[in-house]
Length: 285
Image (cartoon, rainbow, N blue to C red; front, top):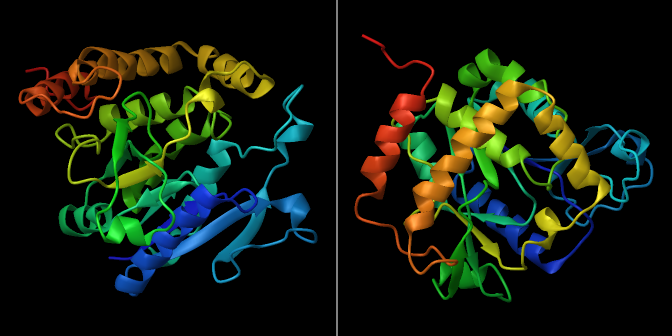
């Protein structure tokens, strides 16, 4: 099974460098299974300074600053991230989209290879700062909190992605701002495997060096844009509410409150029942 990790890196900073090292590590231990592709903006092809020259870069994304009124940061459209990932599938069985500062572990790769799910939605475990990816390998990390509200990494099997592409490409959400991930998580759970649990428990598929949540809570033009996109279609709102109920009423019961580190014993069963009723393929008879 061959997988492609796609992302959009931004500049050169510590959290992202640690994450990139995690993907490099995966490629080193799964040389026949994992490749990495950095998607960048088309208008930067001649000016882009690449801090990761060993990772293939494709200049294909639209400059959203020209489209989003009042925007101050050039963020990819998630519809393009999905469509570009899918366009690379001639030689792959599926692709993983991830935020550029998310540390991916072999737990996720092994699950995909061994169980071949249609799709996976992955939340992250926030950890205290580490000086290098080596700390992950040595298991010398200190958890801060599970980010239960959204997702930072998704996997899409090629055939499932082709069938459901319209669900991911019909809304021009901006990457890194709120609501798109709730919408995507709901699509994966409602249209995917009814019993495929969200990746938000141990062993950990995705780590993330904690830095607060201002990026998704602070008012800005990009946040307003995503809100308008979400509100543009009643189906969007319904799917986001399916996800909101899940994390507020199921995951939100974890302890300690605010950190959500300890999964309740009954959580997997409750999640399974909830999403089996929400799944589009549920047998009504």
